[in-house]
Image (cartoon, rainbow, N blue to C red; front, top):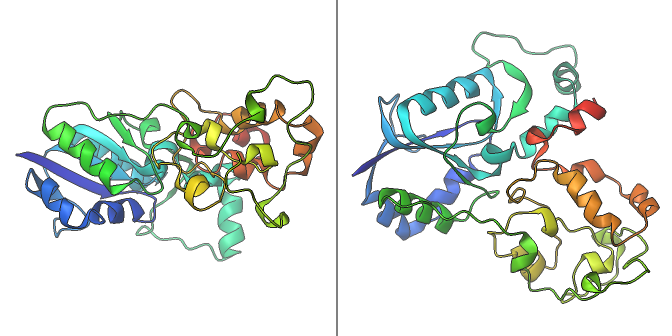
Length: 288
């Protein structure tokens, strides 16, 4: 029987909730592992685990210490969720100086105590601090993905890593994007709330609506575009090998609309780097 340890860094606990959302299927996992350390059981520490799972970004000195402890004590370490894998929403702090962030929240009464974890100057993804063996992205990951990854490791197999872009799973019709033509596909960027109607069958990009599908990893079955009539916002993180997600998305947009049209996007940085700011080299160097 494999031993498992799980922990939380800078996050919302949603990834652990996704594990609990296996409902009765969690018995398939619990029957094959022994949880030696986790926020969901009453344990204070552990000596060793075959599999370690951490969710959340690395934003404080305590987070960094926990990451290093898990790496030392676990044979295999999994980054669970987009925050752990790429920095996620907490990584957006990297756009600003830490002191400016604290001042904007607390004014001139910034709390100070040895019991309060000290923030790192920049938020990091888990693999920027320690070696990560596997990533299970998602905000939060699908319960089935967590289960399948754990059962694969328990059986001595490699977890399946999704590598294609989100568009490969999207049911929306992409027609004009694939036609060689001199004219741009659309003449401007439109926000969802600016349109009276949105064609539920046609690709969002062909309608002038920014969708992060081309640079986002598959895995969520494209639920937002295919079932909710809403464009992808990139919460599954980038496809393998991409770190500058925002720049890659701008490059994709440049092929379908005039460059000047992108000037009218309200938040091109927040859209392009919303879940991957921590792994980017560009925004923090330019906007801060």
